[in-house]
Length: 447
Image (tube, rainbow, N blue to C red):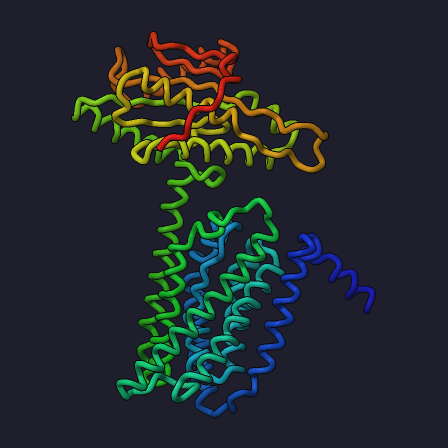
């Protein structure tokens, strides 16, 4: 039996994670268990607490069941580089406020267990990540319990009805909610940073605005806490609000996914095309020019084949960062597919201006340096270069975005046929730049 148990635990995916991640996961789980046990008997359990706990459990089950299909799609679309938004906080935070700590702990464990069985277990999530998420929430929950026990007039229970005492209790509850969220968020971010050394601070906070949705869930938790004590028959309204909140999160996630390419952070091809189409309409109405560039990385397949696709993804992200740094706020850059990028530049002026921008982009990409993986052959990092084709509106035979794209694509082929790492514009007599220019000093940074 012992040998079989060891064989089962040895197969856990946790042991495949980096050592630092394993240590953090185990440490947080131990702290969560220890603090939960230490607060379990802080407040005695009364008969009414059992009723309130049962009511909150029923509401949590109904809410999870009504939203599990939405939640599953949200889990699948969730980026592993950002903290997950926990809307189950409605019920667990309500339990923190009005129930003894042992029930607050039980509510967190129950909602995560039920959600795992009904949502995550059917997906592709790893058990230890789900357990770790539960443990981080438990750590935050015990911190919130300490704040409420020290600061509330009547803990556990609803805020006092007297004006000053009620405001004081509300301030304590808000402090407990912020502390609970900050501990949970902070621990999750530490784990993400350790598991993905290349992740940036910007990546970690990419969905920070959406974290307000979790604040909304805790606000509903406060309402649920008061309602479960004073009038439990109103709780179905909170369940309905939860369903609406989930749908709002999903719509926001889909809108973001439709606008932003996950690998580069640039616009997706569909969104970029719509923006470019609108820009062309404005240029036509205002009698202005519109520039379009197609940037294609040279020999990108060779990089992928030599160093692997993860390395290629790092190169794409580095190039995308250079493109964003070069263009103006009113311009738009998108990933067109594979190793191709597109840039639309409203009111760019003449062809010479467009050529200058293309040339600065080409030189910026020459400066990109991405260290190859450790297992790769020793030597300097491979060089990265790009061929750039451009076209400008108005020009003969160009009246739509697709025609502008075709003209730029034709110019791109001319650039590649000229030896790559060069710029060509469609139907233009501006000075052409050939690969020999790559040794010139880099251009000054744009303002």
